[in-house]
Length: 244
Image 1 (tube, one colour):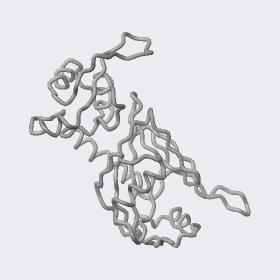
Image 2 (cartoon, rainbow, N blue to C red):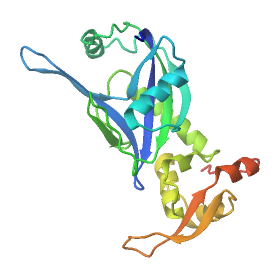
Image 3 (cartoon, helix red, strand yellow):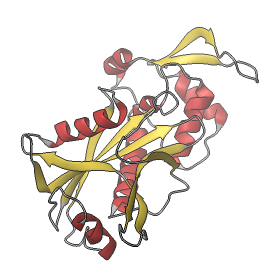
């Protein structure tokens, strides 16, 4: 039987986009006193767990995502390590750890990963705990230092979005330019000029227009596009910049 390493974990910031806002998947952390039925802890955390003795960090992160989504080959990137001496030392966090049976350490170093998912087509679930998508703009109370981890992941996502086409990981295979612009605006927290954005996108050889339009929409159907990874790899020396 695989054993965990009690003082090393990975935490995954799972971002999703629903055509309207950027979301993050959180797991409910609730502890109820068995005698009094009093709620001792009621907050939310990122998706994470300790690595197993035979695992490296990437394997552990992929395992956690697989458990959540049932999917393989999801965009996953390591972005930072969190090893503050007091990162799990608050009374609430210590109480939570003491009530777990896995034998966690009182000092835990975690490696942060962020993952990008189109949450309009993927349903995530965790049998043991409640999970829920929350808008980045309206987060609940979070346990441990997971708010700090989330903010660091968002900082990295914003930086990479300006220089690499990773935003397409948050969209379905076929998308409109309006949907793509909404994604960039939501992640970067700003408003982009519609005409300039469209001009930039249409200059990208790896954003390929289809002879196809939206279906089942109330407004005038817009043209659909796809992102070609193959074309991007051939042309990625060309300038990619969505700096504000």
